Amino acid sequence: MRAAQYQLAKDASAQILVMVPEINLTPQLESRFRARFAPQWGDDCVVAMHSNLTPAQRLKNWLAAHNGHARIVLGTRMAVFASMPHLQLIVVDEEHDPSYKQQEGARYSARDLAVYRGQLENAKVILGSATPSLESWHHSRPATDTTQAGRYMRLHMPSRVGDGALPFVRRVDMNHQPKKTVFSSQLLDAIRERVTRGEQILVLLNRRGYAPVLHCPDCDWKSQCPHCSAFRVFHKLDRTLRCHHCSFTQSVPRACPACGNADIQPLGRGTEQLEEHLGELLSDVRRTDGEPLRISRIDADSTRLKGELERQLAEVHAGAVDVLVGTQMIAKGHDFRRVTLVAALNPDGALFSSDFRAPERLFSLLMQAAGRAGRDAQMQRISPCEMWVQTFHPQHPLFEALKQHDFPAFAAQQLGERQQAQLPPFSFQALVRAEARNQAAAQAFLNAGRDAGAGLAESLHIDIYPAVPMAMQRVANVERAQMLIECHSRKALQQFLSIWHPQVHALRSEHRPIIRWAIDVDPLAI
Image 1 (cartoon, rainbow, N blue to C red):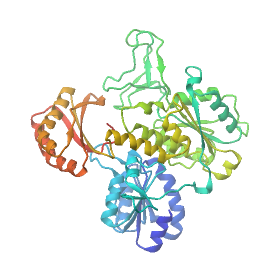
Image 2: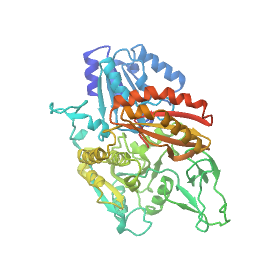
Image 3: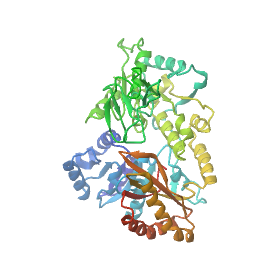
Image 4: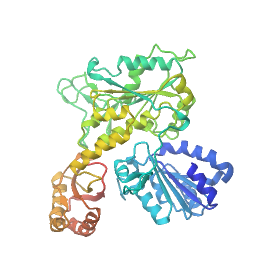
């Protein structure tokens, strides 16, 4: 905001582009920018650009930016294409967030496009994050060190706004808890204590629904989606089994479809079950005014209706909610002034994922979630803020770095591993995906493309791996396969792709079962 103020004061025609990763962060940001800049520059100086706007609203805001009337444009990744003739500053907030990468249609990274646009238009670019992507971190150098090479200058902000302290991180070893424990007794005591003092608690579980699977203990039937390589999630509120990939929905059967057993049970936990379980555990707790405890849930299901997210967030900000249960939607960007305790449940899955970026995403999520606690320095003086992490691997290096809020140490450890394995940012990748009605056809097309480019790849020192099924192999009755291309030179990779792309496109006539195919450069998930 200070950088924007400086640019506007220096040049009366200057325009500023500010991007956030998700739509739910735009209302809070827009209100703050409008409160700061509208008194001087008018109510129309700030406009928003995101997919929740109507076509008429989007056109109006686009024209305001194009004509130079809008001085500040706030938006999601699509805002990087806004027509701004006097652009002088681009801010990419939470630059590490994978939401900046468009995964379908025209694949692009809004963060990388923002940097490129800054070069084209001679505009300053600020990439903001408490947990930068490892690629950005690797390509940056400290502002005080001019001897190092780096694409970006690293500006370090060691203290929080308002001089508040970072939360104290407590790790709970779940190996010492009774089996099937959801909330440790220590965490429950901490929640009770803080609620009775009028403070708010945030509980993070990155899995929506009541339970990820419904199963039969007699015959081992599970709620497999008939159209996808995934399980249908049990949603208790409307008694449905819903696939989160193809949206196929059915009512919960009265008995097991395979053996007729009436005792089918939920397996695992989602935010719905967490909300219900907390209500039972804390039924005896009262607020400071003597009223019953109020627990709320924010996830993609509870905020489906228009305006519901804004209403629920307003209740949290007003102090009407004591315990907020949610997914990653509530873990970043929100300024919850009364939250003094954040609890992360079951984060261990990402520690042993096949995706090499999973630890980076987990550390980012947990550190961002920790940042929701203790944002009011005055409240911290009365009640120091905390983050509780319930894990079966408390000594893992990731949690050690989290406890110290030491992103540089985590980044150094991860970059060391990646350098040994020659993974990005020490190499460059492209992922070719193909979709067909059967897996053999999808893999045959990709392997034919591999054979077509083998000679060129060898001359450019490029590795093309054989085609394999995607982790989510089938979605909506469409089989999906992928093929990885890897090179140590960005220039060589781009040269190869520009020559190879027409050759692969020509293969379509020989492989008619292929529905669609695409090349994704710098893929975020493999």
